[in-house]
Image (tube, rainbow, N blue to C red; front, side, top):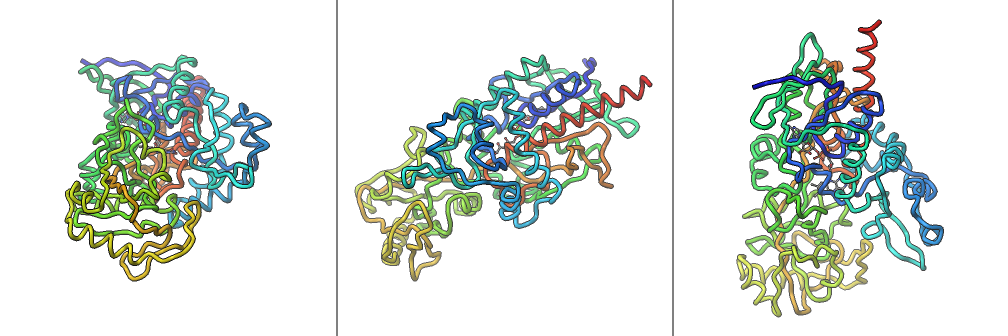
Length: 502
Ligand SMILES: Cc1cc2nc3c(=O)[nH]c(=O)nc-3n(C[C@H](O)[C@H](O)[C@H](O)COP(=O)(O)OP(=O)(O)OC[C@H]3O[C@@H](n4cnc5c(N)ncnc54)[C@H](O)[C@@H]3O)c2cc1C
């Protein structure tokens, strides 16, 4: 049975991009319906799983204090906060994407980032300083680095809780277990959307649809087709519901594909992490990011990357896919007792899988690896380690000579008992392929003309991220383009109604 309902704007998805667009459309005067494919206990998309790190361009600590007014004068006095201007953000985006990010979309993301985060603050989203991963203490002061000093309070869980609270406060309707399946386009404009809900097919009449329902990272078949066969085996770090529905609905009505369809972001993650994100265990707890202090061996007992090639921020996204290429898609991060206390917090969580032994021989016996080769590789590595000052907080140049691949920094012999092995596999974060939008969030057709009444935001947008993304820009892109798409959609539909009246 099919029945119809009407809204000015329908938003597909209920992650960060979707809820920012729903709020902006409502602020713009539109009646808004949000469709979420998941049940209420699995709402919030990938945004729910994040660490909440959000990248914004800012001038100084005063600018940050407007976003985090809770910061006291005493705390502020202790902080050294280098400027991270629009040019720094833009340059970082271009650097990590090999210069491929679409200049117009990138500029819009960067230049709207600060006003968007203050708008989020006005909506009730709370932010705090990212002390743990983005600062260090020197000369009695806390120095921030890397352009990522802000995160949402209580990570992605807090972000989504506060966004849902605001949506409720504004009286925006949300339908759960409501999967958008088809756009209706008549006379060159969107006129409705078809939704599967409660074993029923419902048509919602609307002149304006905002697609904010993720990319296709949770779809094995599409991963295999577009990114590569081995990607079938990747663990999905976030929601199971981002299977590409929105992208393919838009392509059906003539939208243009854009961006790196063969690319995705991925990392090395605990090999026992759930196969898709578990909504009862959010907070990005399965990553294993201390590998620059390790050596990584595969099942054949061989190393396969320079673990210490650079600071973690610059290698982690590349090394996920290197792990995926290894036999069985697994590798073991090996540490000894000297290094173990320096590992990041995630290694101490009860969810962390690891093996521990008093000798390397015993460790090898615990693992399903080629034991002879495993021990030989470690012995060769230990012999190749050069003397030098070991400085874990900076590139110390303490490397190896005579082995391939070499280890360029942080090379310490693996010699102090007990010894540890942390098994890791590849977890996909999101795929980069998406739709072509203009800087206002309007979806473009093959002639690069806006499809009337169709907008997109968040992961759905192609062309901003290639090969990698600067950490924290996923949430910022969702917020910037979510707000823009919401405003554009409300203006479009209310402008159209006004035309009809006149
Ligand atoms: C573990 C993890 C940690 C991360 N950490 C960070 C971080 O700290 N900082 C950062 O910037 N980025 C981070 N990211 C990336 C970030 O999550 C994404 O870039 C961002 O959240 C995408 O937001 P979105 O709103 O586009 O999509 P999502 O938040 O995924 O929302 C999409 C929504 O659409 C719904 N949906 C899908 N199909 C349909 C359909 N047919 N009908 C109705 N609804 C549908 C889904 O259920 C979901 O609710 C992380 C990602 C993961 C997985």
